[in-house]
Amino acid sequence: MWRYCSLLAQLVMHLDTFRVSRWLKRWRPPPWPALLLRVAVYSGLWWVITEGSGSGWLGLVLALLIALCAPLNVATWPQQLRWRRLPLFIGFMLKNSLFGALIVAQLALSRRCSANTHTRTYRFRLLKGHPQQLLMANLVNLTPGTLTLRLGCDTLSIHILHYQPQIEAQLMMLESHIAALYGLDHEPWEYEY
Amino acid sequence: MRELLGAGFILLGIPFFIASTVGLLRFPDVYTRLHALTKVDNVGLGLICLGLAVQASSIAVALKIVLIWGLILLASSTGATLIASSALRHGPPPLRSDSDDSHAGR
Image (cartoon, rainbow over all chains, first blue to last red; front, side, top):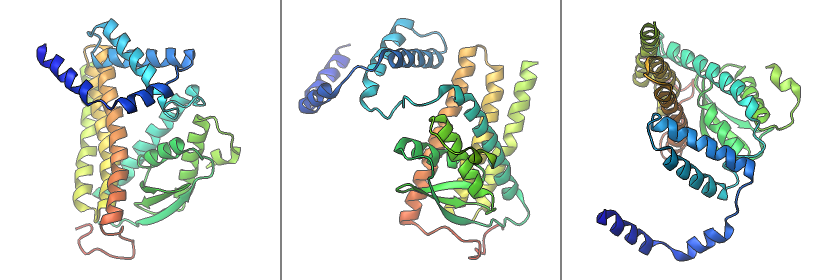
């Protein structure tokens, strides 16, 4: 117990008071609906991590603390996210991921491992915010045959394992799905690929 | 019945891991190997996690296993981009299909 107290005291001594006071000045409480949703999600995560046997009160306090601290960065939980579209989006990504794995596995196990590799630059058409572009950069790695090399200014450098003409359309479709998840308006033709 | 279903998912996941390892050994450069690691491994792990979740003793344990898979998916995807951009900056450029590697596919 004393060891923990001395560790805590050392931590407090090393705290940069200027940074802490600046952090506290910038702090604003999140709106009630967002706070309640976050507390519910974090409490649920606590329940899952402790396999339902952890202290409920401790989980609730921790969830509340994290929910109150998290909104300092406004980009963490975008308000415009369409949660109802999330199951459909997860289904789309699971299907993509399975196809991607099958294509790579087929290529790896083929007699002559002749991959037609290419690099391409993909320009974002719908996603303008950095969090949305970052999400797409991550998800490109799970779609068939593509890997993000670099996220640039409104562009993605992409490595293609086995080039096929429909890769571009596949990336556009992924972008339109992410745009739909964020509630961004876009032309309906982009879904037709 | 649950045990059988779980075992089925786990058995289905194993070939993906084998294919991923073969890809890691056979693919010619770091970029193509990352394809094998991010895609095939994750699906293999997903199927194994699904098999374990089906056999889990409670819903909380099953959800915990699925959560682990989700976090690994996120970490592996982000890690692949970081490794690829670092390789692009400091290592050799990606091989083109017209620049034949004599060891590729052997």
